[in-house]
Length: 73
Image (tube, rainbow, N blue to C red):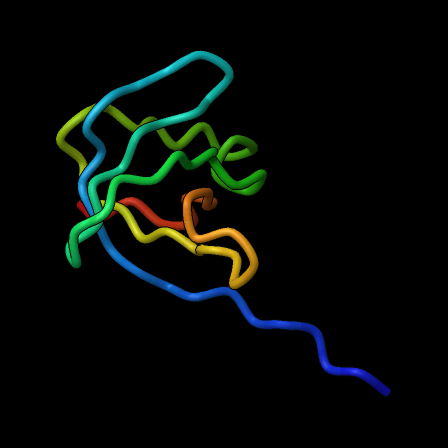
């Protein structure tokens, strides 16, 4: 049984809102990534605007794309 790769959790700030619930996020450790909103956040109508602090899951295979899983208050 092969264990799947686990995503990396990092925090950052939303810099720009793009089409189709995608955002440019500036990570705390430097790079800028493209991230989309997780399905649970869409389901519960969690709004994200530029300037929000968010938690992003990055794929270990492509560190330039991620999924926003949490918005800080």
